[in-house]
Length: 370
Image (cartoon, rainbow, N blue to C red; front, side, top):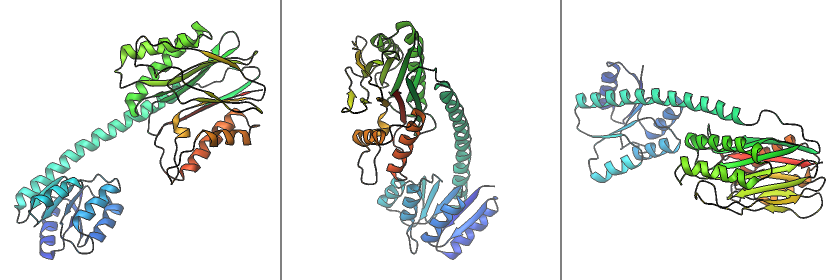
């Protein structure tokens, strides 16, 4: 049975509305002031709110504002003697779904209530189905992340990905490129949600297909991914990526950075090395030229590839976590395993946000050269 909250300070009108709505039949809650109404909305979560504007303690406009500020999408019908256009516009701007001026037709009010609740049930059904589809997509997306780590002598490596929504636009991957080389991908597709996740899957598939064929020619792998995105997506759906191949025996790192946040190499004793971008994001220009660069990882070095959900996480003062704080964290506990390092970074960033929700997906791959 649908539950309706009536917020009205006129006792006779409140009683008449409640009796007629119960006869429909609906489960009816009542409140005679705005403060009580806010509490009932939070605690009882009615299916519809019939809200007077002129109320003691807290007026109806403020009740509406608080309800929407709390993220509660319950339909609100404002029922009031205020008939000025400004009041109607203000109520609708604050999130009201309908506006009925007093005096009103009871038949019309009941018809509007039935219509709103009917549409709400349809919306809830679609919302549940969408949620189920997104959860299924999340399972598929997690399954696309690497499930095993091919053993690489002299390298310890791991990765984690935490979408800010059910599905996201970040991804990472690692796989063996024979003989004895490790390919690593970290990518970030523009936007969020299901659309970004679909592009992410296509990008990852392209890299997985081309990586073994091109070996350490990272520029050719980036070129293949770029051509795929240019051919299948609009330019508004581009992606940044770092793709790297590590020769485990020689500890030689070859990489391409296409518009991505710079990776970090932390030698055991020397200054950090930034793996800066040398090309724009993929998916923007058909004829883009990618340049691969190389360096040697000294024993004890850490390689960190990540998305901006790490370095651009902010605290209560809107100060970013930043690259220096990330480098300092890794140096302070450099003897940990790669998996433990990834978990520590995720935990430290979450603590830095101090309860604030993540604004972006967060992905980290850590590689330790032994």
